[in-house]
Every structure is written in structure tokens, then in C-alpha cells.
Image 1: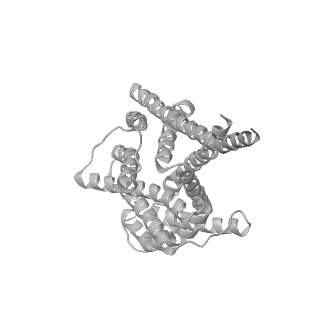
Image 2 (image 1 turned 30 degrees about the vertical axis):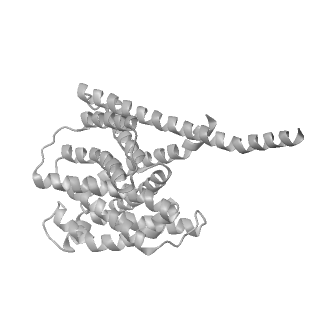
Image 3 (image 1 turned 135 degrees about the horizontal axis):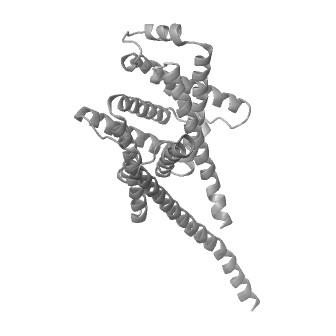
Length: 337
């Protein structure tokens, strides 16, 4: 049992790290967008990427981890994957209702399972599929209010689902293929992200909400009206949170899988809903309560399946390790006879 706890300690810590960092960035970004009116999401992601790169380079300089030279092409692919995922998600959020946006987030989990099977022949057992289905039904009941969507909105939503799934899968596959740690891969691919986002960030002027003006004038207008020291500090802190989110995501997917990362993401949603009721007195309908209970049932079921599998692997490994010693003992006994 101690071996199982040891084997799962890092994933659990990474999951907690991810939950805390994502919660922080949600709160901080609400202040960035709502209080400081910084409606430039692509530019904000660019700022996050710059701070992530600088933060990791400083950490490497102080010996926190060792830099590793990695092939250029995989890093470009991963960077393009990240930009595609963020761009599709932002457009999805701007075009569709909150209800359908939530549906698209829920659909990322089955998309990850389908893509893993189609591209890598990595299937899941029937109990895992059932546990995931129960969890997704619960999350849908607890979070989705309306599903009004146009044909264009549906296409954009499905593109965002594909973007999120391929990004999560690539993170895990690239770490294993390049034999790189989360820090090593993150710091070496981020410069390509920065270049791509610098080229694309002017598109913010099309979707930003404060003024219809196009071009650099929108940045100037924002700075003149809202560019106070607290606003700039909040944006900087959002960038620091972005570093933590990226690092925790890479660490967790590298230690577990894209599917487990998704499960934790849904657990995070349910936890936020529950905390809203307990701490802030949000309303709790019967539908929401049943959804939370169903989602937690699915998460617990999935966790039990993974722990049972881990136990079987540990026992099999122990049997394999004991065989040579036993064989040697029998050989020595035969020689004595």
C-alpha cells in the first residue's frame, strides 16, 4: 500500500498545484478584464508567455533545473498547437453562449479518448468509459443552463474542442518522445509561442469590447484611460499565475495522462460550484445538487479504477523482482544437494 501512495504522491501534488494555480488565474483575470477593462486576450496570453519564459530562464540560471537542447520542429509544432488551442477557445467564448461554451469544454474529455485511440491505438477499458460518462453527465447537469447555438457557433465550438484535446495529448507525447522534463520543454518551446502571438495579437482589436477603433490606437486608448499602477501590477500578477498554470499543466500531464488531466479539470469545476454555495451562499437547485453528486461519483469511480490498476502493476512488478532471487535460491540448494 505504501508503494501505491508513493507512486501517486507526485500526481496528487501536481493536481493540487494545478487546481490552485487555475483558481488564482481565474480570479486575477476577472479583475484584469472587468475592473481594469483589459479586453486584449491574445496580448494577455503573450504577456503570460513572456513571463513564463523569463521566469523559467531565471530558475534555470539559479540551478532549479538543467536546460536541454531539443529539436526545433517538435517545439514549433507544440507552439502552433498551443496558439491554435488558445485562439479557438477565445473565439468560442466570444461567439457562443456560456451554456454551449461549457458543453464544448465537457466534450474535450471524450475527444481526448477518441484521438488517443485513433492516433495511438490507446484505448480505455469499459469501466473507465462508464466512470467518465457518469462524471460528464453530472458536470453537464451541474453547469449547463442553455445550449442555444448557431451552425457557425457549433463549428467554432467543435474546433475549440479539437484544439484543446490535441494540445493536451501533444504535451504528454512530446515530453516522453523528447525525454524532457516539464521545465525543459516549456522553456524551449515558449519562444516560438511568443513570436506567433506577437504576430496574431493585433487580432484583439477585432474582438475587444471597449472601443471599435482598430490598430495600435486601442492599446493607447486603454493605457490613457485605465493604465494605472494597480492595473499594470494586476496584469503582471496574471502573467505570474500563467507561468504556474503552464508549469502545473505540463507536470501533471507528464506524470499522468491527458485524460486524467481532464478528470481533474472537471473535479475543479465541481469544487468551485460547491465552494460558491458553501462560502458565498450561491443558490443550489436540485438539478445542480444531483449533478454535483453524480460528477463526484464518476470521479471517485475513475480514481478507484486507476488505483486498482496501479495496485495490480505494483504486485506484478514485485512478483517479477522476486522471481530471480527465488530461482537463484533453488539453484544454490540444488548445488548443495
